[in-house]
Image 1: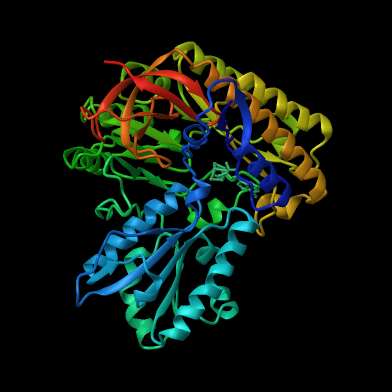
Image 2: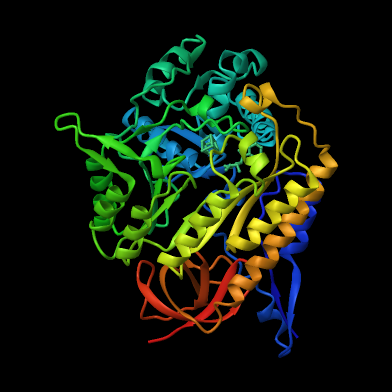
Length: 512
Ligand code: 5AD
Ligand code: SF4
């Protein structure tokens, strides 16, 4: 009997029920009959394919740096990919100051944590980490501790009052000020800068690519968000939306390609509203045009993007995706809810009919496109009928995967001010469990329908579970694992015939 481990996509938010489901999901679910090679067969080939990768939460970003005489910094990152990307900007700013990154907290004279405020659990995690940093500080007096990102922005000086060990607090638009803040902190002063900017895009800073496999990289194309979804804290922590000069984006993509990178993701809270106006001519470049410019850097450079907003994704974007082979056929298009009443309370500014039309158009223009989503269970006043609408739209859209959450009220947001968080936690969790289970079934079906197909896969490196296998993604962002061949190495494109599938990973073999 062959046993494949199956893992479906879930963001558990640390609650017990979903954690248990996730646990079950990770282990034996899928049995197929064959052979006795238990050892070989129990390798779990599932690889993470998430844009917002929960398993990476708290990852330490580093490259090996044992140069003597340098000051060392240690940085952990939480939250979305944008935060991980920001940490690379911070690393670049610190490098200019003679700091080198280390993966050992004990070696660092500066400990930084890049934080997320999107759900209560994310903030709790950071608070727990601060206790650990405090221990390091006690062991090595003089060590400085800095809190960066959304939590710094949300709590401002209150964070310093509540967490006495924190030496500097820096909001997402104030990273250029870190050297000055460090000097002040070294003098024992309270060091805080949480000013938000309408212009800052860090366009001229070349991020220090930390913890990189040399193939995959992220490029921030814009910052902030103007959408004001009622549940979301991001517009308050990351400020107004602003787009980065396209010349610097294309230059960064070109530089990455020259250095061997082959897969880049253009990042923004709402990439479809990218909008850059040339100060001299007044000419505007929109997202479809930007995509085309980046796609033209080189046909061997794969382009991805995240996140799209259903109200803003245009047909031009879809036609541009279809026109260029190297623009990946994958769209992360959060639906949040399938109920019109809830969508309105969420201030998402589209209806379920609008969303379904966008889905129809995506599949009409690109039948092979994969779509993923974010879904919130148990938003204020959500009824059983509203919940059922969400399950229905998940089936309609046939999401290949989803990030699923239960609603977590965030202070200061529109929803916190206007609505009561009135769905009891056990009910939120029950609904989330139902959503997770449905997504699991849809994902399995999605992946099983790929069996027998041939995909072009970009090799990213060794499979996590076995160095006899490579892993890589197809255009649809699905992770594919296959036996190695000596002819190919990471960075190469190979054609893979899919022979088997789990919930999150495809298994296959190279075809010549
Ligand atoms: N509670 C639960 N989920 C949230 N998200 C954003 N704010 C909240 C909240 N208050 C989810 C949304 C968003 C994703 C990044 O996080 O689904 O798309
Ligand atoms: Fe938050 Fe909505 Fe902006 Fe996304 S689009 S960051 S959910 S306000």
